[in-house]
Amino acid sequence: MLKEIKKYVAIVLIAGVAGFAGAKIFKLTDKNPVYVNYGNGAHPYLANYSPNPPEMVNDFTHAAELTVHAVVHVKTSYEQKQFGNPFQLNDPWGGLFGNPQYQMQQQPVEASGSGVIITDDGYIATNNHVIENAEKVTIVLNDKREYTAKVIGRDPTTDLALLKIDEKNLPFIVYGNSDDAKVGQWVLAVGNPFNLTSTVTAGIISAKARNIDILKGNTKIESFIQTDAAVNPGNSGGALVNTNGELIGINSAIASNTGSYAGYSFAIPVNIVKKVIGDLLEYGTVQRAFIGVSIRDIDSKLAEEKGIKQLKGVYVVGLTEGGSAQEAGIKDGDIIIKVGEVNVNSTSELQEQIGRFRPGDKASVTVLRGESEKNLTMVLKNKNNNTELVKVEKNSPVTFMDSEFAIVTQEEQNKLGINGGVKILKLHGGKLRNAGIREGFIITNIDKKEIHTPDDLVNTLENKTGGVLIEGVYPNGMRAYYGFGL
Image (cartoon, rainbow, N blue to C red):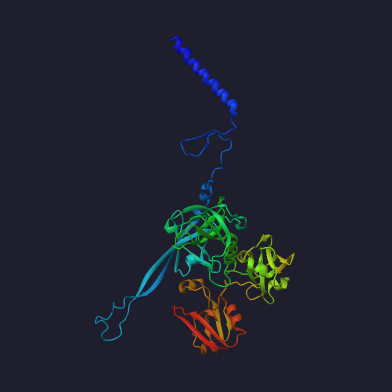
């Protein structure tokens, strides 16, 4: 027995000495990694404990809690007229004795999107395309309360709209600063995809100042924030927020071949949202400022052609006579590189920055002329090349061409599916009456130019000579075209 014990002690001593010698030979310390092999072909893994563990993934629960109750479900309804089956006749004889009378069917159509509560007294921002042409807009809060919303104003050029419900003490999302948003930054998309209410998805900002050519019109502003947060039909008008729960964009579009999320979504920067919503609240319409230049992006071909050394900024191709840029001293061939302290490297970035101003505002721009930079201050103007603001809250008639005109109400616009327009209240004679136009007709376009206010109509026709084409719609929905000479 004693002999066996001595044998085991000897083995333990030998093992200890061998381990000690191995440590000395290979100099193993707590700072050296130990590689563990789990079989043939397995990759080595660090097995020692690190005092500095890898950074944890961001926790989005705080941002979600701050925003989910302030994003609403926007439901819209329409009455779509359709002709009945041509073989379903009121005439029991099957039309053998005259022309059949087809039945007109009224089919309700419903759609939905999202909206963001921006004040505690019920103002809601959403996309214009969410509520465009709607006869009724219903807001459903996260706690399932429902309200009928009033459309305060719309701006198709930025795809934004402002709604109002009668309620107090509502949760709302505070504005952030989209200029501070960085590529690679975590963001959350909050909305109601596929009627799945109060849905939150996460992603990062993939790019900024994207122009995807989805809006219509010469004065559109497209400078989207691109993200990979999952956005689907129903998310339109919902919130894009940062990890602090601040609103940095309104979700508006997706890039997809199927109509569903395929990797990228696009949001309107909140700094544009603030400007547009502020204008709709204060003036009833958006006050657009223009710099008065024709511009293009700088690419390698243009740089080689014009001898441009740095591919940055926006190239000035032409100037509007008497426009803001010309009066400030900008010249053809200048390169606009900054608006204020913000760098601009594309036409969409420049349009985004200028789109935050109103006519009459002063804007500081930096241009590159040859090798030197010049700081210029310009007074921005409206599309009529003056600094006047337009206010449409009062519907005072305007007399012109022996006729009286007034702005079309928002209710009429919603009912008829139009954006703006000028209504003829009285026709006392003159060329409009002679052309066959009748009272009540709403003029929406003159020579393919959109008409939103009586001032638009006067400015378009005042010095017009030759032929003119007027397009519009009557209160009963019948569209009409009139051509005549001035």
